[in-house]
Length: 435
Image (cartoon, rainbow, N blue to C red; front, side, top):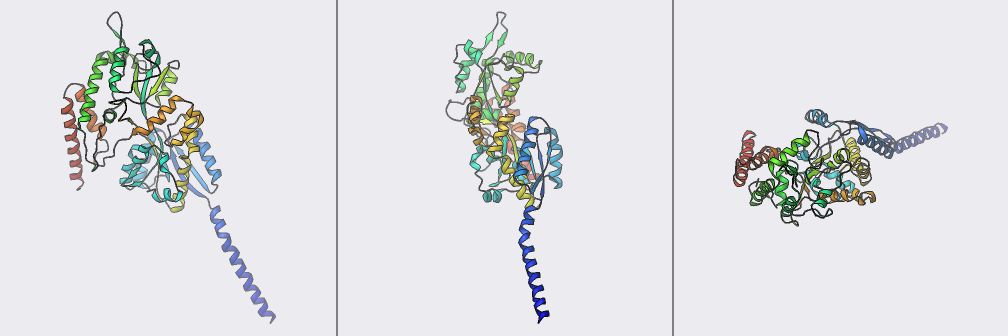
């Protein structure tokens, strides 16, 4: 009888031990350290310092996640990341070109985020609309909007005052720009132009932006190119007209003189208006700290409709190693795009973040320049992704635009040829790839 009692006692002890071990398993799982690799775009400087601080905060918040970071310079990103994606050795989460998210999605190099976004209850409407659209391929999300840029009108307030123009009111329509240019162009007693009203280096604003501000679009609902619309021809005709009003030769002389010193005509005060991206503020702070300038939305054909700008920037993208690493990487992505972290980068490094809520910070609200940038972001577009020819803006549209500006073709012929060239490129791609 005693032996039976001892046997049952041993069985009960063994069972109790098993129960205790099983109940401890979840705690052990929670304590398991998950390592993820993260490549970002801050090799050094203030951005790198903020990133290190942010990652430390994240790992303190999630002690079972260890982030191995690597900051890469602009050239290094493509050199290291592209072959890593091809080889399947890319990091769990990385920062890369926002405009080409869809290309990597098409090649199945990155992870679809739909389920993660759904499970996390993320509100994607808090990000600039174009940045969400460009992260979407075939109706699914493949990137998280991270940082972007926008282009606005910069204008010299002192020039406006001298010309009798209100320094707090920028032109809203392209016709108003012509009126302003007439008042802002200055010629000295020798007939030499010393100041022009507008910068006519057209890569600053780009043909696609001009077309958008006239109501043009370059793709229809079935993803067919529409480069030769009446609106696009009208935009091109206007650019030729504005170039003539400024004086192409006069501006070129001022441009060459300015660039000899490494700065632009707007920066040295020989051009009154230009279109530039938000980062131009840093250039002005360095090379023209006393310049009194304002910023405004890019003018449009009628000053009311067709508000538009052009942007690109950076996305956060993910590769799948296993479910635990994927979930950890997504948590990091959520944190990096949160309002808290976005505001840190905005205020600490003047980054143009995609999270619109960051612009509600009181310090940003008090800055009229940043408020224009925030508004411009709502109208900013990113190039339509064409899988047959992702480079279409520069390889097809821009050359024909330049042909018209140089007088080699009429605007109508230039846009007709752009359309033909685009269709040819698409057809050739499909034939070569058996599509």
